Amino acid sequence: MTTIYDFHAPRAGSPRSGASLPSDPTLLDDARRLYDALSEVIRVIQFRDRDRACCYDVSVSQCYALKAVVDGGPLTVNELAANLYLDKSTASRVANGLVEKGYLARARDPEDGRVVRLVPTPEGGRLCERIDDDLSREYADLLSDFDPDVRAGINELVTRLGRSFAARVAASGGSCCVTR
Amino acid sequence: MTTIYDFHAPRAGSPRSGASLPSDPTLLDDARRLYDALSEVIRVIQFRDRDRACCYDVSVSQCYALKAVVDGGPLTVNELAANLYLDKSTASRVANGLVEKGYLARARDPEDGRVVRLVPTPEGGRLCERIDDDLSREYADLLSDFDPDVRAGINELVTRLGRSFAARVAASGGSCCVTR
DNA sequence: GATTAATAGTTGCGTATGACAACGATCTAC
DNA sequence: GTAGATCGTTGTCATACGCAACTATTAATC
Image 1 (cartoon, rainbow over the protein chains, first blue to last red):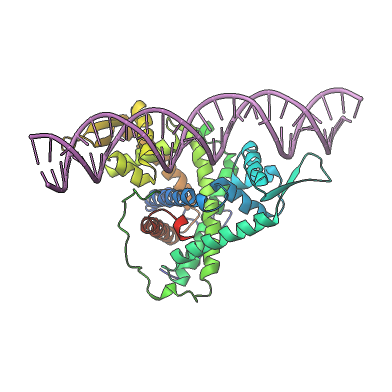
Image 2 (image 1 turned 120 degrees about the vertical axis):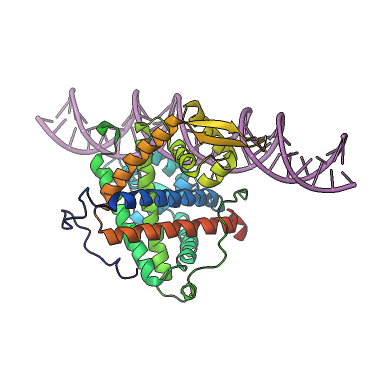
């Protein structure tokens, strides 16, 4: 259970010949289980985030946006929206809230008069760091239930899951209804 | 503030014994990585769900509630709320929407005149199955990128993550602010 | 057995979140 | 220089959620 998570490259084509066959007996069962398990994780994390938002000066979405800007360097509104999978109008408003609270600043781009570069203020940086520290401690507490090699496996897999999801969403263009 | 939820037992003992040492060098790094990776996964799944909701007759939260009732047998409003980590008022309204659409039915409990037992209608069962099938297919498509043993590992770990989160939330009573 | 307390569910209300469409401002192409 | 694309903002609407107050029912206490 500990070493199998160190597997192969993310693969683009389909080097794993049999894995993607629809006849794979466990595939659908695994899919259903993952669906259930991820749903549970998401619900409980959302709950935690809702509850936790009151601890700081920002809302849940503002927290995500702040972190995106702090981690991703100066971001345009469009980049922020793409980063958070939000409409640009929503991203603009979320940024607005952070600007009003003094955690972000809007800077005009000298090259292109249309774009707005969102940059964190010192206060924003400090707040983000504080939230990061608190949450990381919480996750550390959680991960301490697992052995180090299992933890590495979790991270590897969750990261790959995220990438696969993101790629899938990007490929579908974000509209699922046309296919139905 | 949100101490009403009485879902899982707090699961007193941690399964791992020695892993919780604070001196573990990689623990905090792992925690930070998991925090980032899970955030990404959650955002993209929320985006997908938002987008996907239009494919069916129900909203995202209604979809979760429907599945909870279908999978969990007849549920009271309180049980549904606990299941979804929602306030009972929200759960009541979500259920209301599903009742209006004919996917759930409210049944009075003969034993206790206060409780309402939510049961899926045949239409609700069919809709849930259809959504489950579609989503499972999507997850299967996603999982086909991974080897079967890796898939099993993913499920194992995500499931354990969910349980740990739930236990943690239950233990903390859902209020993080008191500790700060 | 009547009164009080506890519990289940609903509703009022405020807020947060998010999308879509329309708009002004700016840049690019011809 | 005009037409079109792009960036960001704002108007508007719908949904989601929690908290508090309320009703109806059950349980507890005397």
